[in-house]
Image (cartoon, rainbow, N blue to C red; front, side, top):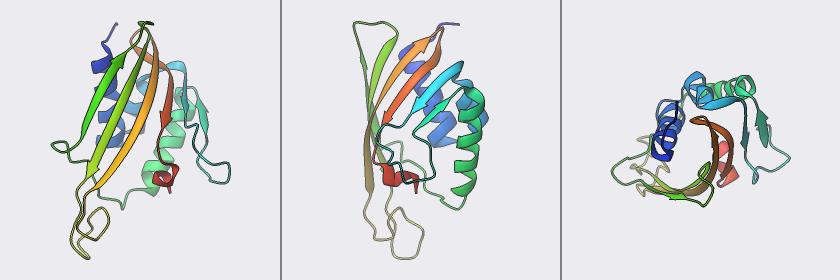
Length: 145
C-alpha cells in the first residue's frame, strides 16, 4: 500500500505523540525499520538507535509507561509542521513546532509557570512501500527524561 508523505507523517504522529500507542507506532515501520535519535547522549538509558518493529515497540512501550503521569498533550491549534519533499521520492523531511500549553502554578501545565512550551524538531523519513524504513529524529534529548 502506497501512502503519501502526509499520510505517513500523520499516522506516525497520531500513534506516538498523540495516543502513545507503541504497537501502532511500530506498525508504521517496515519489519526491519530503524528509528534513530542522533542527538541522544550516550549516558542516558534511552537508546540512540532501535532496529526492527519489535525493538521499536518494546522501547517505546516502556518509555510511554514511564511517562504515564505526564498528562501534557500537544495543542494542535498552536502546533504546526511543514513537510519538505526531496529529489528522492522515498525521502521527506518534517519540520515541526509542537506547542504544549502552559499552566498556572500547580495545575499540571507544561512548565507550571503559565507559559506555553514550544518544542522544535526535524525528522528525516526514508520510506519503502508506504512504511518508514528509517527515521532520523533530531530533537532536544532532555525531552526523553
